[in-house]
Amino acid sequence: MSAPIPASPPAAAPLPRSRSCPFDPPPEYGRLREHDPVSALAFPDGKTGWLLTRHEDVRAVLADDRFSSDRTIASFPVRGLPIRREDPDSRAGQLISTDPPEHTRYRRMLTGYFTVRRMRALAPRIEQIVADHLDAMERTGPPVDLVPAFAKPVPSLVICELLGVPYEDHADFQRWTSTVLSVGVDRDASLAALDALTDYLIQLVADKRRHPDDALLSTLMAKSADQDESANPLTDREVAGIGRLLLAAGHETTANMLALGTYTLLSHPAQLRALREQPEVIDRAVEELLRYLTIVQFGTVRVAREDVVIAGRHIRAGQTVVASLPAANRDPGHFPHPDELDLTRAPSQHVAFGHGIHQCLGQQLARVEMQIAFPALLRRFPTLRLADPRTRVPMRDDMFIYGVHALPLAWDV
Image 1 (cartoon, rainbow, N blue to C red):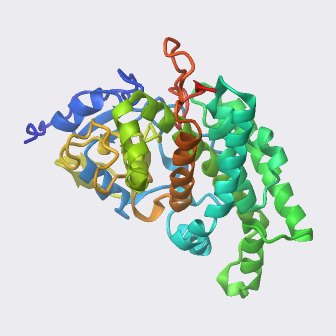
Image 2 (cartoon, rainbow, N blue to C red; image 1 turned 180 degrees about the vertical axis):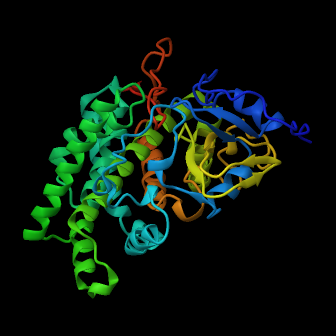
């Protein structure tokens, strides 16, 4: 049983960020979850808010319409994401940071494109993309850095084909996205990268107006144009904003899951052996890796629209609440032995993709990509290993999306 929640919160502290193991969230989350699950949080902008570390509280807040997703009014636990608060046009199409009814309008137009059936229909093409990159790795021979050779290009090519974005531009949009998601980059550089990515998508949408194709951006424009005026069709800037979000999320998250997931498997040989011997558990294995690693490392922000009480704490209207997804996914009150990696773990209500109306739109695509990529990589290279176990793997502690910056691997030839 958890210790009693203190009657008054201690002084606000910054978000815990120090890890003792590359695969585990900061150990401070465990102490907070047990003794102070709704803890006072100090933000870099000088304001104070709250940090949630229990699974039940995180899910409750993410599904509670008394909390807003509007990032223009939120504080951030680390450097803020680049947002031009004074420019509404810059936020057009950004459904993850909007509330109903605007969010509902965007989501309704997109949901049908990301169903389980549609994503599974992409499997043959994803299998071919995976095979092509494994062929290239084999031709190159060890050692190979998995990040640029496999983990990053596979989801990048998939999302480019899905959206209708020219893959030959991948170096540019990957660089812009990386800058935007870097904690250590100053605001001006981050905004410049965001503007460059936005301008690129706006120009692409304009080109597709003149020369439509069968991909998602063109289809989205055509679908919107077919509606009558009362349906409030999407503007080109909104389509570009949706494209910017899907393009960035579609390659950054899955790329880091592929690389970090591979590092995790190689570091847990018994689990890796079990997956090799029981490939039929891949669906469960992917869910467990998602739960265990939870790469959205700084949590999800919400702003209280009104005064709310959570676990005895009084959250004032206007305060920012950070729902820690990594802490929630290691909650022993919900997951038996949560700090153990168990690729055969029964399906659970993990929150790696969030929860509520903002739950990740592309989660089914990410699942299909991982369900294909991990087994294919392990089959192709049965002796896969770290190229030099003595060398520290560089972790993405400095990025909003956790993972590895590089993963040099070797195998027997």
